[in-house]
Every structure is written in structure tokens, then in C-alpha cells.
Amino acid sequence: MQLSDFDFDLPEALIALRPVRPRPASRLLVAAGGATHDSHVRDLPGWLRPGDLLVFNDTRVIPARLFGERRRETRDGAGVARIEVTLIRRDGSDLWSALVRPARRLAPGDVIRFADGLAAEVVAPPAEGETRLRFDRGGEALDAAIGRTGVMPLPPYIAQKRPADAQDAEDYQTIFARRPGSVAAPTASLHFDEALVGRLAEAGVLSARVTLHVGAGTFLPVKTEAIAEHRMHAEWGEIAPETAEAINAARAAGGRIIPVGTTALRLIESAADAGGRLAPWTGETDIFITPGYRFRIADGLMTNFHLPKSTLFMLVSALMGLPRMQALYAHAIRERYRFFSYGDSSLLIPDRG
Image (cartoon, rainbow, N blue to C red; front, side, top):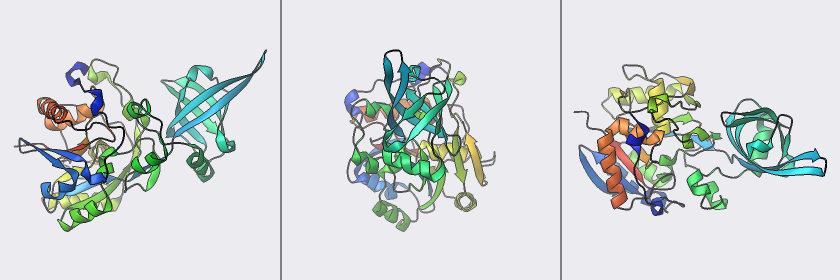
């Protein structure tokens, strides 16, 4: 298939710059049994069955955008360049790979100085868009410094419209966030609050937690027209023994396994065997799900609305079929659903006959 197969026209006015409040007040487009329904996230318990299991990603977004200066002595004195760093992958206690702007201003040995006395040395030149940085401290001390000096790494389509602010520290974090490591939120889970989680449990809907630290690669565009030539960035994930057991038990009892977000779906599909059984799992996944993929364990998906030509729109097209997704997105655009990270959501249940 070609990249152009996954293109569509999206009015810029439908790109959400702030979430709705309360969180479950977001709209929910339900596609199940061949039918399409306009609903709200607060009504989710009515769309699920007792025994269904929702899989949440408990990763926590770190304030991964840092702003600093590089100083270099020149013939005319000290040359100063302002540098923006987005951390994307931890490679060691004091070592991070990062997206750096402007990368052309940096060379190995340069030191970037941030607020609060934090500093990092460029230890490798940019390669495939990434620069490797070694900070002047490691472990928890580095985590604390990043927490004090960094800001939330809002997606590019929001950051281009407005800067991150104090409200984003709450808005761009899910109520399930426990394990720091992501540079992007698992946004489908942003629609949940404690009250909705309680109502789902009362309705007999089960839940389990997995961890997938979302990398900045989720925002990188596909640059190859032949989608089979695209290579995904690897992301680290973990499925605990008790989580694998809970998911296997729910499936054996006839419950549907419905990941909340593409991150949770990609992780359980990476870990499941050909028979749909899940085992405890730790490692990196670069799974790329496109039409033609045979799903092993996911029976549906709750997810936000994705960018044209994105790997995530390809994933939902693999689940539902490309013609069905094109029709669903056309409906969402006509009905003025809000798109992307702070936008509305959808519940996709394929008809597997």
C-alpha cells in the first residue's frame, strides 16, 4: 500500500489545543457491529460488556523539553546559541538521546547549559535526527533536575500554536501515570477520571495495566511512499506476570480485550503468541501494524483521532479496514469531532464475522 492511501483533508479548526472538562465529557465515536454511533466517553460502561477488559498504559510523561545555551569561544568573543532539546530515549544513567534544534549549531564536545545549573555535553554528532547528550549528573539526581527545569513536550501540532503552560502539567498526564519515561502521553487514557473508572468496575468491566514508554518517534512523519519501507522507532515496554495472567483469564472467560490507546495495543500485540496468549514481557518493540496484519489478542481499541498519513491511522485501518476508517473519519469531520491528543475519542470494535 502507498502512503497516499492514508491521506485525508482535516480542517485546522478541528485540531484541539485544550482538552474538554470534565475528562469524560469528551465525545466518543462508537463503531461496532457495522454501525456508527455518536456518544460520549462518560457513556462507555454502556458500550462494553461485563467481563470485557480494558488495558491501560501506566507510563508517566516527563517534562522532556529543555531550553539552554551553547557557548563557544570565537575570534570576536563568546558565541552563544540558544538550543532547544527534546529528550526521546534514555541510554544510561546520565545519557540521553535527544532531538536538538538547531542541531547544526552543535558539535561533539560542546556543552549546553540549562537552568538550575544543569548541563549536558554533546558526545556524538547528530545521526538520523538524534543527538546523544551526557549530563553532568545521573540517576535520580538527573530525574529531579529535569523535573525542575523541563516543560511538557506537547505534540508539534499544539506546540506550533501555543507554548506549554502550568495547566498542561495536569492535562497531559493520565490518572494511571505511575512509571516515568514517556515523552508523549498515551492520549486515549486522558479521557478517564476516577469516577468513570469506578463506574466501569461496577458494570463488571475489568482492567489491567501495562507500561510502554512513548517516544518522540510517534510524531515523526512517514517519508516513504511505499509504507512497507518505513521503519518504526523502538520503544521500551513491560507486561508484569499478574497483568498477563489477568488478560489471559479474561480472554478464556469470553471477555473482549480492548486496549485503551495504540501504545497499549502495540505492546500486547508484540508480546502475544500466535494463539493469542500473553506471557510476561520486557523489552523494546518496533512493531508496525498496517492493513493485512492479523491481530493476535486485541478485540477492539479505544483511541483518539489521528493525523493523516500517520502510522497510527494505518494501525486503526488495519483493525477496521481502510474503507471503514475513511468513512468513520469523514463522519467525524462532518460532525465536528475534535482531533489529536487533546481531542475526542473513538471506540472501534471490528466485525470479525
